[in-house]
Length: 364
Image (cartoon, rainbow, N blue to C red):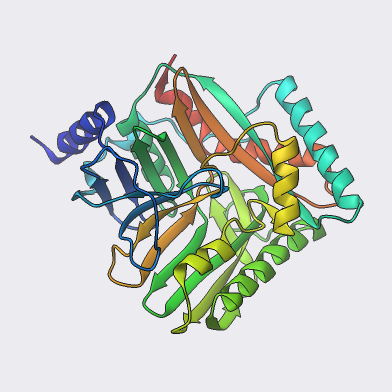
């Protein structure tokens, strides 16, 4: 059997079975990893300093546990074993448009957020939209392969657990990379249409939004026991049809640093929640209208690259497969002077990153 057939066959077998698994490709790498938990039980992260496996953490950890897949079996496939790119839809050009009802709902939500911001209780809040595609079956191998091929610099994954469900995504946003004492993160915020290598004009709203995230992450690292925290000047980070403002953040772990504390302090960042975090979370729970579950959480490797290691990404540009539908999520950061119509346009651009691929690999 060819390598290509092996990868497709393995993913089809896993998708039909009941064992928890994660299939993922780290940014820029040419191999796809498959991690299978041989137990159907729901394992949770109890100690991030010592637990080892693939983490799938929710947006709000107090309502849903951080799931841990233990590495019962691990395999790797070269990217060349994935289905050929010519059988995949091309990345969409322009904006993928939804219905007027979706637009009106989101514009109203942004208006509520602006009211709260102007009252002075919030500096920023992230409000999101969930869109459902009718779906009786997802081609897991095809969808994962399309995401991996079209987004080479993203963390691409398919996660499945009989107690949690199945999720797909292609995240451009690193939450935490740890190798011993070396720590890295990024402050990603602000969105414009991607137009190649050109000079982007970032307005005050986008610059302020990104700066809030940078300050928060720097403070979270320092409060958790990290030293020598440095934040780079913001630059452009492309992610499919959009580009973001991004600062690279580096730090050193001290002997006092505790991973449980660090992850609690880091996630969710203002890029997915808002600031101050407690007030932003309250607004989201009250007005957004649905539970985010694992959208806006984080996922990736924990202590799989050795002791004191982690490679975790924020769960954005993601999709949730459930009975009869595939749910797509996207959110935007709102400040007091945000324009609701422009915010809706940004949401549409973010949905455009995954919607055409999703539609191609689902059956109604």
